[in-house]
Image (cartoon, rainbow, N blue to C red; front, top):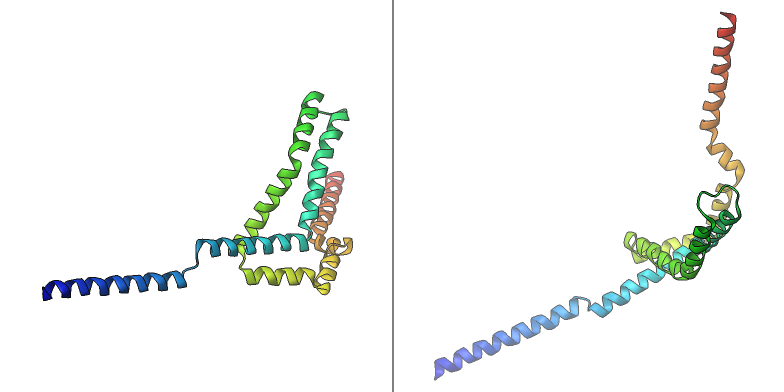
Length: 174
Protein backbone atom coordinates (compact mmCIF):
# COMPACT_ATOMS: atom_id res chain seq x y z
CA UNK A 1 0.00 0.00 0.00
CA UNK A 2 2.81 2.37 0.87
CA UNK A 3 4.50 1.57 -2.41
CA UNK A 4 1.31 2.33 -4.35
CA UNK A 5 0.93 5.59 -2.48
CA UNK A 6 4.51 6.53 -3.31
CA UNK A 7 3.96 5.81 -7.02
CA UNK A 8 0.77 7.86 -7.05
CA UNK A 9 2.63 10.71 -5.34
CA UNK A 10 5.39 10.56 -7.95
CA UNK A 11 2.82 10.66 -10.76
CA UNK A 12 1.11 13.68 -9.18
CA UNK A 13 4.46 15.45 -8.73
CA UNK A 14 5.34 14.78 -12.39
CA UNK A 15 1.94 15.99 -13.56
CA UNK A 16 2.31 19.12 -11.46
CA UNK A 17 5.79 19.77 -12.88
CA UNK A 18 4.60 19.25 -16.46
CA UNK A 19 1.62 21.52 -15.85
CA UNK A 20 3.88 24.28 -14.48
CA UNK A 21 6.28 23.81 -17.38
CA UNK A 22 3.45 24.19 -19.93
CA UNK A 23 2.16 27.32 -18.19
CA UNK A 24 5.65 28.82 -18.23
CA UNK A 25 6.02 27.95 -21.90
CA UNK A 26 2.69 29.63 -22.72
CA UNK A 27 3.83 32.75 -20.91
CA UNK A 28 7.11 32.85 -22.86
CA UNK A 29 5.80 31.90 -26.29
CA UNK A 30 3.45 34.40 -27.89
CA UNK A 31 0.00 33.10 -28.64
CA UNK A 32 -1.25 32.84 -32.21
CA UNK A 33 -3.53 35.81 -31.55
CA UNK A 34 -0.58 37.87 -30.30
CA UNK A 35 1.46 36.85 -33.34
CA UNK A 36 -1.44 37.82 -35.64
CA UNK A 37 -1.75 41.18 -33.87
CA UNK A 38 1.98 41.80 -34.26
CA UNK A 39 1.82 40.88 -37.96
CA UNK A 40 -1.15 43.24 -38.45
CA UNK A 41 0.74 46.08 -36.74
CA UNK A 42 3.78 45.43 -38.91
CA UNK A 43 1.64 45.34 -42.05
CA UNK A 44 0.05 48.64 -41.02
CA UNK A 45 3.51 50.17 -40.53
CA UNK A 46 4.53 48.97 -43.99
CA UNK A 47 1.36 50.53 -45.46
CA UNK A 48 2.18 53.80 -43.65
CA UNK A 49 5.64 53.71 -45.23
CA UNK A 50 4.14 53.19 -48.68
CA UNK A 51 1.90 56.20 -48.08
CA UNK A 52 4.74 58.35 -46.69
CA UNK A 53 6.88 57.59 -49.73
CA UNK A 54 4.02 58.40 -52.11
CA UNK A 55 3.77 54.88 -53.52
CA UNK A 56 0.04 54.57 -52.88
CA UNK A 57 -0.72 57.70 -54.92
CA UNK A 58 1.75 56.58 -57.59
CA UNK A 59 0.09 53.17 -57.79
CA UNK A 60 -3.34 54.82 -58.09
CA UNK A 61 -2.01 56.94 -60.97
CA UNK A 62 -0.62 53.80 -62.63
CA UNK A 63 -4.01 52.11 -62.35
CA UNK A 64 -5.73 55.09 -63.98
CA UNK A 65 -3.00 55.34 -66.64
CA UNK A 66 -3.38 51.66 -67.52
CA UNK A 67 -7.12 52.14 -67.93
CA UNK A 68 -6.57 55.29 -69.97
CA UNK A 69 -4.03 53.52 -72.18
CA UNK A 70 -6.62 50.91 -73.04
CA UNK A 71 -9.01 53.67 -74.06
CA UNK A 72 -6.39 55.44 -76.20
CA UNK A 73 -5.52 52.13 -77.89
CA UNK A 74 -9.18 51.71 -78.71
CA UNK A 75 -9.35 55.00 -80.61
CA UNK A 76 -5.79 54.85 -81.93
CA UNK A 77 -5.00 54.16 -85.54
CA UNK A 78 -2.06 51.83 -84.91
CA UNK A 79 -3.79 49.30 -82.73
CA UNK A 80 -2.71 45.72 -83.14
CA UNK A 81 -5.95 44.04 -82.01
CA UNK A 82 -9.61 44.40 -82.92
CA UNK A 83 -11.34 47.27 -81.11
CA UNK A 84 -13.71 44.86 -79.35
CA UNK A 85 -10.73 43.28 -77.54
CA UNK A 86 -9.80 46.69 -76.11
CA UNK A 87 -13.41 47.41 -75.13
CA UNK A 88 -13.80 44.08 -73.33
CA UNK A 89 -10.43 44.41 -71.63
CA UNK A 90 -11.17 47.95 -70.43
CA UNK A 91 -14.55 46.90 -69.05
CA UNK A 92 -12.95 43.94 -67.24
CA UNK A 93 -10.07 46.02 -65.89
CA UNK A 94 -12.35 48.82 -64.71
CA UNK A 95 -14.49 46.25 -62.90
CA UNK A 96 -11.52 44.86 -60.95
CA UNK A 97 -9.24 47.88 -60.61
CA UNK A 98 -10.30 48.79 -57.04
CA UNK A 99 -9.87 45.26 -55.70
CA UNK A 100 -6.71 44.84 -57.78
CA UNK A 101 -5.26 48.02 -56.30
CA UNK A 102 -6.09 46.96 -52.74
CA UNK A 103 -4.64 43.48 -53.26
CA UNK A 104 -1.50 44.83 -54.93
CA UNK A 105 -0.86 47.38 -52.19
CA UNK A 106 -1.33 44.64 -49.58
CA UNK A 107 1.31 42.57 -51.41
CA UNK A 108 3.69 45.55 -51.50
CA UNK A 109 3.13 46.17 -47.78
CA UNK A 110 3.66 42.49 -46.98
CA UNK A 111 6.88 42.54 -49.02
CA UNK A 112 8.18 45.46 -46.94
CA UNK A 113 6.95 43.90 -43.69
CA UNK A 114 8.95 40.78 -44.50
CA UNK A 115 12.12 42.78 -45.21
CA UNK A 116 12.11 45.17 -42.24
CA UNK A 117 11.58 45.00 -38.50
CA UNK A 118 8.96 47.12 -36.71
CA UNK A 119 11.67 49.51 -35.52
CA UNK A 120 13.14 49.82 -39.03
CA UNK A 121 9.72 50.53 -40.53
CA UNK A 122 9.05 53.22 -37.91
CA UNK A 123 12.44 54.78 -38.62
CA UNK A 124 11.80 54.76 -42.36
CA UNK A 125 8.39 56.38 -41.84
CA UNK A 126 10.00 59.10 -39.70
CA UNK A 127 12.72 59.55 -42.30
CA UNK A 128 10.14 59.77 -45.10
CA UNK A 129 8.29 62.51 -43.22
CA UNK A 130 11.47 64.44 -42.40
CA UNK A 131 11.51 67.81 -44.19
CA UNK A 132 15.25 67.67 -44.95
CA UNK A 133 14.85 64.22 -46.48
CA UNK A 134 11.93 65.49 -48.58
CA UNK A 135 14.07 68.39 -49.79
CA UNK A 136 16.90 65.97 -50.61
CA UNK A 137 14.58 63.72 -52.64
CA UNK A 138 13.23 66.78 -54.45
CA UNK A 139 16.76 67.84 -55.39
CA UNK A 140 17.53 64.32 -56.62
CA UNK A 141 14.49 64.39 -58.89
CA UNK A 142 15.42 67.68 -60.57
CA UNK A 143 16.62 67.69 -64.17
CA UNK A 144 19.94 69.32 -63.25
CA UNK A 145 20.82 66.39 -61.01
CA UNK A 146 19.65 63.88 -63.63
CA UNK A 147 21.86 65.55 -66.25
CA UNK A 148 24.87 65.27 -63.95
CA UNK A 149 24.13 61.60 -63.30
CA UNK A 150 23.89 60.91 -67.04
CA UNK A 151 27.27 62.55 -67.73
CA UNK A 152 29.11 59.24 -68.36
CA UNK A 153 26.65 58.34 -71.10
CA UNK A 154 26.81 61.81 -72.63
CA UNK A 155 30.62 61.73 -72.58
CA UNK A 156 30.83 58.32 -74.26
CA UNK A 157 28.35 59.48 -76.90
CA UNK A 158 30.44 62.63 -77.52
CA UNK A 159 33.59 60.54 -77.85
CA UNK A 160 31.82 58.20 -80.26
CA UNK A 161 30.77 61.16 -82.42
CA UNK A 162 34.32 62.59 -82.38
CA UNK A 163 35.88 59.26 -83.27
CA UNK A 164 33.27 58.60 -85.93
CA UNK A 165 34.00 62.01 -87.46
CA UNK A 166 37.75 61.27 -87.39
CA UNK A 167 37.12 57.92 -89.02
CA UNK A 168 34.99 59.60 -91.73
CA UNK A 169 37.76 62.18 -92.42
CA UNK A 170 40.36 59.44 -92.61
CA UNK A 171 38.29 57.61 -95.20
CA UNK A 172 37.81 60.79 -97.24
CA UNK A 173 41.57 61.56 -97.22
CA UNK A 174 42.49 58.02 -98.36
